[in-house]
Image (cartoon, rainbow, N blue to C red):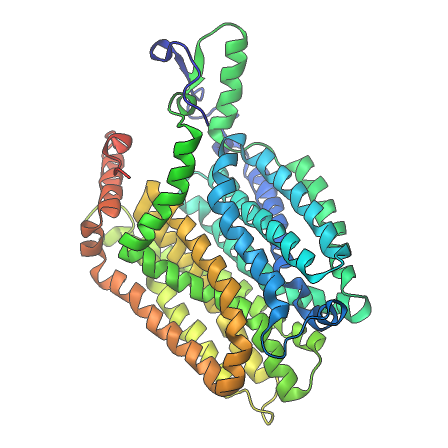
Length: 503
């Protein structure tokens, strides 16, 4: 990420695609090839995300071996907390540095480093080692998650084409964390806790080989840079537009850190969207603690048996995918009544079903989970509440993320970085309060408190729907995005870089 390397940039030949049907353009690849790469990337992301929570079912054995106590504080959760915080730092500091390397090398290199950091998880001789190495493992997984999302964006050109793969990405992103205890439970039931990591080495290593064979470079400007490099080797003064406009590394890092926080603390929409998404994801991590506490306390189950209950959350998340597709249909149909930019979907239409997911899915599920948590009730009753929360979480996270991306356009990357910081931070620290909250308030009122918080946060997207147009007009970032959309619709140059808001 250096400044333009050419000696005579003004006379450089700009390398671009050979027309709209250039076969090397990933947008023009066959549908089967696109989906093969998408499924490979999403499977890798799903499996990697299980690493975050898969050891939670074995916390008692880990505590015993390393002389760690949960008597006054849930210290056994620190390996998960460090894992999620690794995601925050890697996405803000490491990811921008790897942008120019392309999706393939970034994905494969990160996957390999992740594989390496699973080894010390299996052989750790003290608790501190487990916490430290999981910080780096979590950082790698965050980069993998972002990488799979980038692959989807590079392969599918239109919003409509991206609908299904992006919805599947949300399921992989949330479902991987929820499936961790579900997969870890049968392993720990028959083997020692270290075998949870040993088996991860096997399947992560196998997937790494699959990725090497299947994944190709999908980032357009990287493919074009290779063309330009070949032309330069022949003596031509050829460069891509990306190379000519490259920023210094220092500026890239400053922007990647500064702009997300500027958006977070100056943009009403970004702040409350981050809060809503972070609480939703944090709740799923909270279940890795509360489900065991509730089901062991009510039904005298073992932690391993309680781990199987996470299947309810995971099944709910899979069901949520279908509702995400319905939400997308509502969004695209809204273009018929858009008077602001005719024939363009209304950004707030992304939120219609998300509000329902927040009210009836997350809050409603929490109420069910709360008030069926009695020994006299069958275990399936609170599990239904977990299923509802899982389903609502996918609808909420996919809807709010799509809305922010649509409303902020070229600033969407910085806005989504806010989501990464918020979701990982809340996932790190909210579950640390679970034990105290459920012991102090009781199973019923602790979950009820979470339900009321969910209802309160749902007021934010409701306000976006009601006052969306005026909110967008008052925001300099969203107002610029709307101008760009209108210019694109009319076939005019957007002048985006010239109008770009100064930092």
